[in-house]
Amino acid sequence: MVEAPQTEEGWFALHDFRSVDWDAWRDAPERERERAIEEGKRFLRHREQVADSDEGDSGLFSVLGHKADLLFVHFRPALDDLSSIERRFENTALAKFTEQTTSYVSVTEVSGYVSDEYFENPESVDAGLKRYIEGKLTPEIPDDEYVCFYPMSKRRGEEYNWYDLSFEDRADLMADHGEVGKEYAGKIKQVIASSVGLDDHEWGVTLFGSDPTDIKDIVYEMRFDPASSRYGEFGEFYIGRRFPPADLGAYLAGETVPTGEGDGDEGGHGESGHAHGEGGHHGEGGHHGEGGDHGADHGGGHDHAGSGGGSAHGDHPHGEGEASGEGDHPHAGEEDGEGGDDASDADIRGELADLDIYAGKPSGEDVYATVLYSEADVDELFDEVEGLRGNFDHYGTHVKTAVYEGRVTDRAAVVSIWDTASAAETAAGFLSELPEIVARAGEESGFGTMGMFYTVKPEHQGDFTDTFDDVGEILAEMDGHVETDLMMNVEDENDMFIASQWHAKEDAMAFFGSDEFRETVQWGREVLADRPRHVFLA
Image 1 (tube, one colour):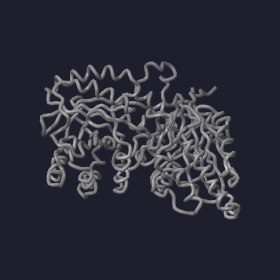
Image 2 (cartoon, rainbow, N blue to C red; image 1 turned 90 degrees about the vertical axis):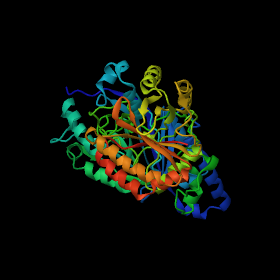
Image 3 (cartoon, rainbow, N blue to C red; image 1 turned 180 degrees about the horizontal axis):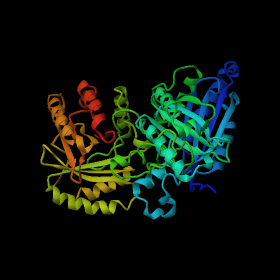
Image 4 (tube, rainbow, N blue to C red; image 1 turned 120 degrees about the vertical axis):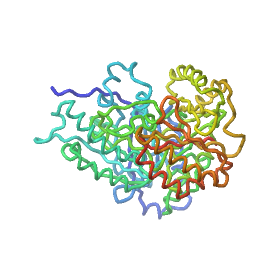
């Protein structure tokens, strides 16, 4: 008998597609429509805040075309939770104006394609891979605006039968498939869940991206890969755009959503209050096959944070795509370890988005950075940090702690990245006791540090530093610039941290909007081992 991979299940998923009875809506009295909008907003807001469960996530999308008007996506720990959500919606005044055109039920999973070791000896799996697996099992809905959903199965025909292949052949096919998906890391995020025994197909694929043409391109390119061309069978495709519950009235009035006016206390998508707290993950898990993952950046960014993770033997249809642009901008704490202000973080992300620079959550999750600067001997400092890091590694929320030595300053930077603000604050307390800590580079108190992490291909390490020196000359002439240093990880000279000091946020943004920055980024794509990661430390 052909070997079936082991699986472990996580959250259940419901894709609930609704059409609006526009004739009934237009004919309804104004008071009745207002009540429907308010009850609909309240229902959807509470779902996004996960007021009905201890954990999970929900999102609201408009759907283009005749198949549906609205899509509600819900992830919850139990199937009964989803059943309750369906019934609660039917009790709202909005429900009478809608009809459920279709739905899809599935459950997130990981399989032996991700890591046989995870099933055979889970205690031996490294922390990065564990975080990656947790992200697959308990996904959050990414902030990217566009969504594409479709169900799929593996073919069981006379000529091509996926289930007649050996485990090794399936794993090799999916590894090759993943190489295509890697090209879309930074553009596409996905959540893929198994529906074997739960719905008509075998998997439900949900792709998220800021540019709908990226969704088209990845699906198109994947069709030419044998894992799809020989073995893939697909259901209907749905395309839509996310918008916050606060915009429900605008949507029903025919306005363009999202309106961009924000939710205020309404909740909504993006940074609004998820009841499941700070440690959640946007699992970019998925598979054009069997609960595995065939894509880039296993662990959703943890690899380039130095935490490892992932296996080549996955089944993701489109790879571990992350959001588009030149880098990640996790939520970041200040140098003293306090969590960054959500509102200002959101403003910065929005402004960078206007410059076509991604500054969203890496891998769909918040990470919090603490950066302190020390004037101590770097070897002495590293010995102290290494001792603390050994303790940090016992905690699942720890992503990375490293020491970076300056090239043009006499200071070193201690960078510690965590999944939650509270963990970062706690770590800052320990790190602040390190020898000869100074508040920040220089004595300026403006915008502070804009940190950029880069991993450079070894053969281009010298080219990168030389180019940085040229950029440094440009920076020195820019208004509001205080100091910028290219700092190197004392354990890996190819891992670099650019610590850039500015008087004000507007000054830093002017640099991001410059032609020089864009040209440097374009060149950097050729020499970087993975995409840059940006951390604001305002």
